[in-house]
View 1 (cartoon, rainbow, N blue to C red):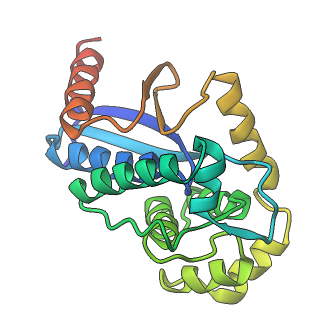
View 2: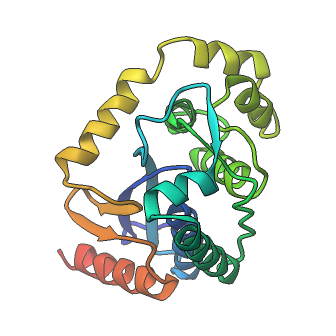
Length: 224
């Protein structure tokens, strides 16, 4: 229960649904939130960022091939995949990178944006979690409208409604604005946590670090 003396902290999280550290960071951040006292209220809004905005809409590619090009060959890709999968496992996540299919994430970001609108169901955090798990664990094509509609049905959303939304222009301008906003804020890597539009916390920090920062911010806000 909140009181008149509660500290309310607003945090915008810039991230992408094909970013392993964004999923790991989400778990660690949620662990930190679970440890906060009831007098600290944290409002989270997910914002769009694309690791690969040039990815062809409607097409997929095994993520291993993407990593091989990006990091300089099969051995380097194996090392990166092994490392992030190990860190993910420590955070309670089951990464199956050999099944992951890299796709353009614009449609996914539009669904996340839509879920963040007032009175929207399901909640934005649920849609974000669904898309991350679908990509990293279940090998789903998170760039395909039909696949996205099927996934959204698991959260109680109407399949036809999702299809109609994705076929429209709704949310396109707003998501493009979020992408531009990341550039304006100087965000070049994700996840990045922007607190009250002023302070940035970069990367998938440990839960203890997130918790410590949030407590200090709450104390500062309550004293002001």
